[in-house]
Amino acid sequence: MIFKRELKRNFKSLMIWSVVLSGLILLTLSIYPQFAEQQNEMNKLLEAYPEPMKKALGMNELSLGDLMGFYGIEIYMMTTLLGSIYVAILASNILAKEENEKTIEFLLSKPVTRNRIVTEKLLAVFVNILIFNGVITIISMIGFQFADDPEVPAGIFSLLIVATILLHLTFAAVAFMLSSMLKKTRSILSISLGIVLAAYFMNVMAGISEDLEILKYFSPFKYVDAAQIIRDHQLEPLYMFIMAAVIFISLFVSFMVYRKKDMAV
Amino acid sequence: MNIVDVKHLTKMYKKNRGITNLTFSIEKGEIFGFIGPNGAGKSTTIRTLLNFLYPTSGSATIFGKDIVKQSKEIRQKVGYLPSEVHFYDDMKVVDLLKYSAGFYKTFNPKRMKELAERLDLDLHKKMEDLSFGNRKKVGIVQALLHEPKLLILDEPTGGLDPLMQNTFFELLKEEREKEATIIFSSHILSEVQKMCDRVAIIKEGQLVKVETIEHLTKNNLKKITITFEQANAMDFNLEGIAKKEINGSEMKLLYSGDIKALLHQLNTMPIQNLLIEEPSLEEVFIHYYEK
Image 1 (cartoon, rainbow over the protein chains, first blue to last red):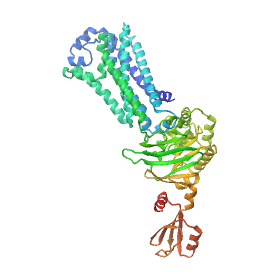
Image 2 (image 1 turned 180 degrees about the horizontal axis):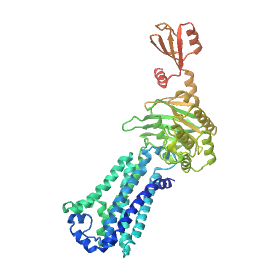
Image 3 (image 1 turned 45 degrees about the vertical axis):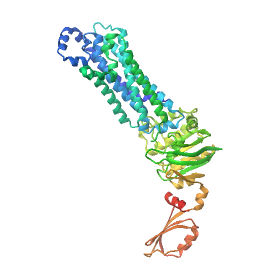
Image 4 (image 1 turned 30 degrees about the vertical axis):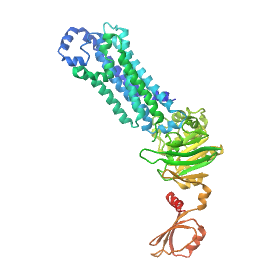
């Protein structure tokens, strides 16, 4: 019941985010052939970029002239960053909205346990993330067809997609936890978006300066670094473990907090 | 058999006052009123009974089931109308009612249409387009739709016009004939008097008294304001004057004696104006405390 309702309620925003991101992906991939064609000149041009900047964008390890490298630098940034923003918004709202708009009084007067409310809403977030990533994957594969040689290594591409989903789930889990704890959707939204953006900038900073490299351990964006995945052909197990732990703990806390929360409207 | 059994129920908030040590029970088929000024703890009591709030101490059962541990089973047979009705704005009335019905074991579309018709509610309007009174009607339908054994109504008549209030009271009477028990909170004394068998008077989070309506109305307390023609009110004494206040040519009484005796007395006096009113709740409370 609640699951279906949440899918319906969030469908519009899923559509908008998917369409916008799809547009960006297609647009970006459509200029790839030119990049590939003028690879030599491009490389020369890029040489001129300051080293820290290249590092920050992962361009020191990846090549824009290679389709997977191009994806890793240009598209991956969009799917991870914009996608994380989308899932943070989605998960921040989903529980607290009922309290914020005082509809929780209606919902809780029905014969439904709080655990079920949390479970169904969580499931709705999960399904939305999967659909969103499904769209990204399909659109990217369509976009690859712009290239003269549209073949990409399936293994690495799947790893990048899995990494994106894991990153989205991590941010969604944290935002979901905030949604279970607080009541005002607006403050939850600011905190969640703050976390996503702070994590992103920590990743960029860690790339720019050796001194700040320690920051990378705090940024989930670093955990799913495209350059590392393309280079190593695997997801770093330690990072995967950290993300899994963050997801697990956040969800556990969400259930515990929501179960015992006083719903005073 | 007691439908509701409350024992030493206490709910403390961090900041606000909650409810302290409430003990009472409600019998099957009874219409039980909660009465008290705003902020007295009526809603807190109701929300604790429905497990929106966790009790700080004490316990309560509904249908013999624990309000915390077996809340879901309890709510299967409870209909709740909140004092402020908030629904999902993007839904149509009919969608909301179907959503609501989906949580229960049974759904009777015929009953939904009947209830909506009697309350003059358009099922195909969007929630966001509804007035406060119409939202309240949606609230009433969703509370009654699954034919609950216990109805909990938190200030149910606010926002309803007098005609609708009558329809609403008729609906309640029908539920009562089906042996439903009804809890009814209000700060309007006359409303409670009209409907309820017994009332619990709550003030500042505490139970002042549980009283049958008969007993309350036997007191028959009236607030009487007399304006005399001359500048100074003429004093008189009658049996049943609970409180007297003289202010220039005006005299204010709380009177629980025989109305005829009063009128007889006044007949002989040069009075300019006479006002007989139901006392406000505060005045009833004062009356109660002074006794």
